[in-house]
Length: 164
Image (cartoon, rainbow, N blue to C red; front, top):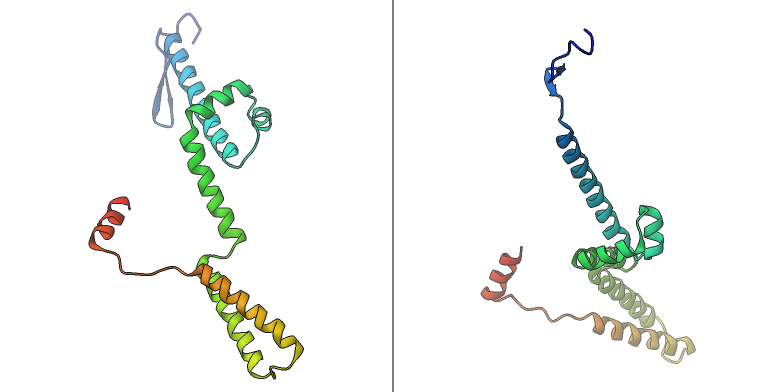
């Protein structure tokens, strides 16, 4: 079939789906929405990189976007950045510090071990003072970990349910 004989709107069937020729205006609209999708992906990546603490300069090089655009995005997306930064910080704390329960258990185990060792030593032994000093420091650290526990009120339970 020659070019001249082709109908104005050409339908092509690919695996059961008919493709319709797109008019130039529709093509432009699709290109714009594709650009918008690409821009949104860049913004998401910007939020991730900024939350990890990367500088505008570093992010601009990676995303091939000007620093002024990044500053504008930063203002526009400051809540998202802050939220993701908080998650990043929490993940780092979890990774590098024991959870509070873990610290309490570890301190408790160390106190028990020191108490066992002290039971077998005479108080006149020189290193006993050092062990007692360590024991007191462990008690101090354990006291800092203390959390006053009490049952939640009905109102507090209801507030937690509403948040979750």
